[in-house]
Image (tube, rainbow, N blue to C red; front, side, top):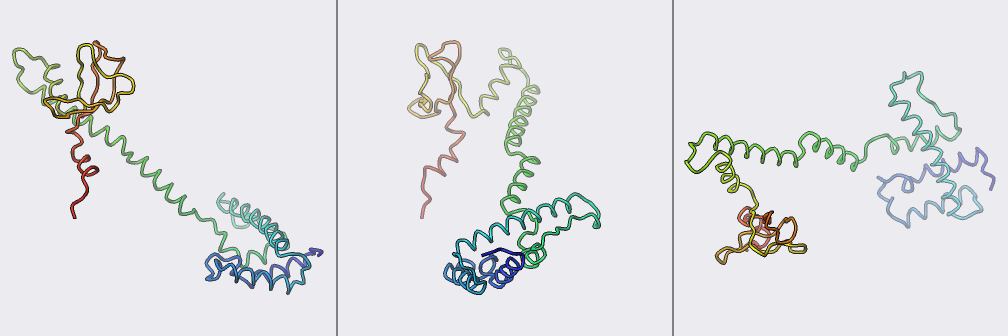
Length: 235
């Protein structure tokens, strides 16, 4: 079939008459049987000698050209140019296609784009990681301020008092033992005192180093979380 301008326009007119093919909001859009029947009607009315697959390829070719023009128009509209300077396509099929497809190609951000923009904006304004660090720093400064106001004992200076107070607040424990300690592959190893699990290995320098203590995450700092995760809710 020779795709003259008149043949293309006739094809588009028939295509417009079957919104179940091109309109995602149409109740029959997801009905494969009705969509296929619509293509069969178009093929018959057009007198197209080829296959429906070939008709769909022609549709895609026309849609590609149409989307290209719409993209160009949207760029002009968002550039702030005057109405007299807005780009107007001269392609013979554009006006007909735009008469029923324009609403489908209005330049709007997708739901995913809106969610991403919202999430990015929220993270920029109030990043949770920075909030957590700020809260920890605020606690540390309050502890330091409290320590500086306390009357020093004879055997303690400011550093000792601050160290003792911070040790009670931080969610880690530092410990080491002679000729033993945490090594590679020991992350999660238990720290037990008096038969009670008080920590799990979380960091170390070297293996059993006598110069650097091993770091353990305190169990008591995460009791609430452990109870929520490990204990099933009562019925």
